[in-house]
Length: 202
Image (cartoon, rainbow, N blue to C red; front, side):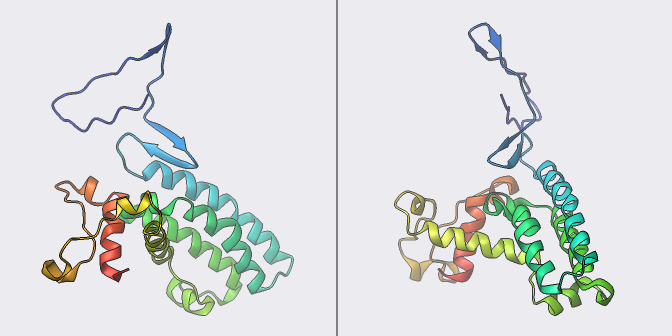
């Protein structure tokens, strides 16, 4: 059991049974490779993925010592490490904290140091040299791509409803954005991608 309760006034410890067996109450759980926490923050997931990705950097170091080319090292980083950090990106991108974002970027920064060897100056110049984007920019692209693809699905297009009268909407926004009073909802996946679609006018 996972209990999502954000009330500061009421709290409870749920008890559920299957037959005579009481189910455990947990604060986090992994679902399809993504760690969901009861506070709906992404600190635990970020820590888990960054730790796992950092361990894979040894593979790049090993290849570098064996004389692999810059192009080979970059390709291996993209396939083995970057893909891991981008798994399920549309789910959590909008709600990442600045600390979470920096933790992800630091892994790519370390990888670029290995790839460029002694020619690494700083992260910004490494991005230009290797013609790469920040992971934050890539996650934004992946979210937009997911949202655009969802527009063509019979079931998924319902997540991104069109506004009835586009000409009367603020700034000509095409898609309805779910009204949210709390940051938790506003930064969640669907409202975040609804705003992206409006920003880039899919």
